[in-house]
Image 1 (tube, rainbow, N blue to C red):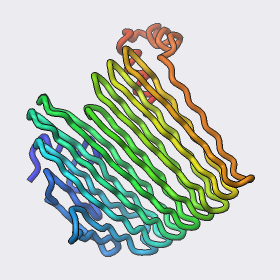
Image 2 (cartoon, rainbow, N blue to C red):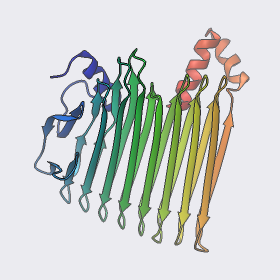
Image 3 (cartoon, helix red, strand yellow):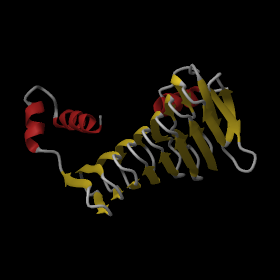
Image 4 (cartoon, rainbow, N blue to C red):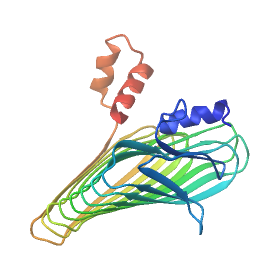
Length: 305
């Protein structure tokens, strides 16, 4: 079912070196190819459009669901996935898309993921993107994530673009209710002439809601990155945005954090920094025996870790 290239991409985007335990749905070249459900996690194919419904029963603990997508053809793939994270549950969701494009055609995956995190539920969501292949066709990924977090619920998001993606627009929209919590960690690497845009909007609508967004990126060669980070406080709440970028060569980076308070007890903070690798860091590593290139790579890996 899976060849060597497929297995490499599954390992890159979902840390899968074999078929996982628990629930999973693996999509390849626009079709579902492998699926497993458990007593507490159901996966149902949508009838009106391409995609799946993932239903996690209330009270489910210490379970996971993997939903990776891989493309090895020059096609355009679109999915709509809906997640029902039941009240009081605690689950791990691992998504991500890997594209291997050796053709002259564009290989593109667009996905809309909508999450309903019910009262008191906890979810960790990991999404990785990766591209490879020696074809002239572009590798394009456009994910959209929409999350509703009910009272006392929490979501931790890790959104990572590893390498090799030519074009991406990532849209993330989150609404938090009373005492809900959100942590977003975004890591992004662009090289050559790649373009990446990330738009994150967080609305803290409930008293006691908290949100933290940490975005780190490295832009190399002639690549372009644009970040729009928008946080809105409608109640007594706390929010923090931090966007740090390392720029190299002839790359361009725009970071546009925005905070808006609609309540006198909303506490919102934003920070943004763009800069190059500090020469002191390079010198310190080079005195330990590393070449300049090795020292640079070590710093970049640590920054994006």
